[in-house]
Image 1 (cartoon, helix red, strand yellow):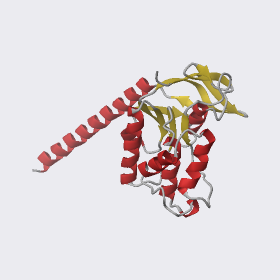
Image 2 (cartoon, one colour; image 1 turned 90 degrees about the vertical axis):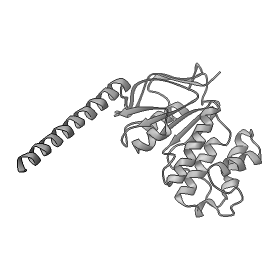
Image 3 (cartoon, helix red, strand yellow; image 1 turned 180 degrees about the vertical axis):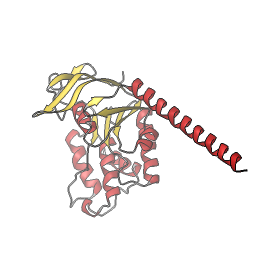
Length: 245
């Protein structure tokens, strides 16, 4: 059985500000789900809601029909990278991941090494985390999220600080996780990159989920309008050319 995440009328308020507003959404395993929206739209809050890091003001989140905050505190199998990865500055990458892995004690040292290699780092690199570049820190954060092969993987801006080769590497990792039956949820400010990485994309605007069909229809209407405008422009240019000659 795959993993199903379901949000029902999920609303979250902080004081008088509504950061998530009546979200209804069902997500199933074996897919990469992309979340798009401008800064402050609610993407990260939605990720926090699914991971159990915040509880709703009203509404519910279910992981395989078990309600977060009541029947379970957190999804039983989840890997997270939300915002900037944070590790112990004076420890190596491997030592940091080994400490994290000891909490669940589910994987071997070799599996930790494998995750580090997958993201393009060296398990035996003697440098400490504080000497890592931004891109290396990002890669280590992704390694931490995937090393236990979780059922749900949540990555906020996974290709931030990565070059084109790094983005391609992450795409391969996401495809492998998807093939193994994980549900992957990512957020990315770059729409082109998000479309490249995702199977489905949902837009969030001011805490609300934008209707996908309406958004697609609006997008097509804009594209058609642009095409007509270009055709008119080309037609006028042709007329002017004939008039001159």
